[in-house]
Length: 280
Image (cartoon, rainbow, N blue to C red; front, side, top):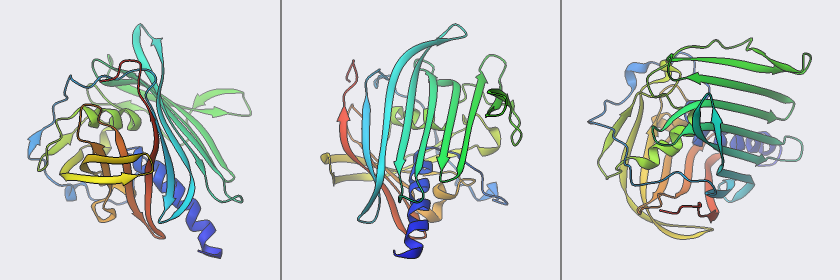
């Protein structure tokens, strides 16, 4: 991983971030007819609570090479347009010194209905920087997107993306990660999720593969292995063999996330966990 290793390492950190953020940038020319067909509907379980204070910390690595850290957390309660919401965040920092990655996404979720009302993405990857804000109007069934303008010092309509209609009870990519934890995950099950807020990226298909005991820096865990398939997103295509390990208990901890990349397997491994205010 000498010369090319630096550039490959930077791509690896970006790949690890987008692995846990469902439906990032669509791959051009992808045929949606290749998506696997679901065998049964997805229904959320009411047993798992979403609570302020829950925090996951991960190491980001390609093979044995650690490239950074990631933090997934439920940060606060807030009110937006009369809706009582929880603000969740995913932050990733790392990469080689000459190509730093400092990315953060934030989701404002309605915990009871498990749907999104606002989504924010701040990206800093080497010289590239942008800050997008999505407003999801669940009552109207539409979303809008704005991009921060350094020149104007304010958000303006995005120059590269338009809003539009969205499905009922729509979820953004970070909220989707929490929603998957509420599903009745049984090996052999397969679920179709037509709730991503950008309708063109539906359906998301989640396959429940097996039960497996694994060891990560935070300890040894009994887990359920899940394969999320999103045809339009490179790291979630079936050929990338994406995997998510979720504890097989009431906590539903996300212990590990992994996908493949041109420079090797990219993984987020749990290093620490802080329980929420109301632990399951």
